[in-house]
Image (cartoon, rainbow, N blue to C red; front, side, top):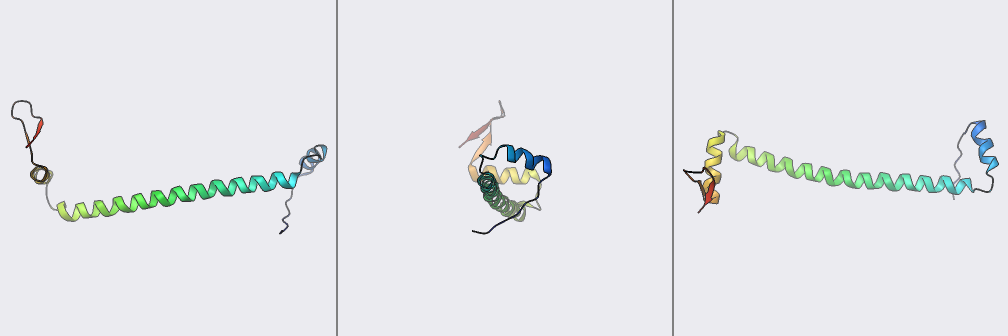
Length: 97
C-alpha cells in the first residue's frame, strides 16, 4: 500500500496525540474515499447534464433550420395544421378536430 505524508500544525498534532486511541490513518483514508465518491457522483451527474444539453442543442438547431426564416404566426399555423387544431371563435380556446 502506498504511503502519503501530510503536514499539520503543532496544535493539531497535540490534539491528535491526546486522542491517541483514534486510528488517524483510517479516519483520513475514509475521508479521502468519501471525497472521491462524492466527486465521482458529481461527474456522473455532469455527464448526464451535458448529454441533455447536447440533445436540446441539436433539437434547437433542427428547429431553427426548419423554422428559422419564418415569423411566429407562420410557425403557429404550421403546427396547428400538423396537430389539426383550430381556435373557437366565441371563446378563443383551441379545439382539436
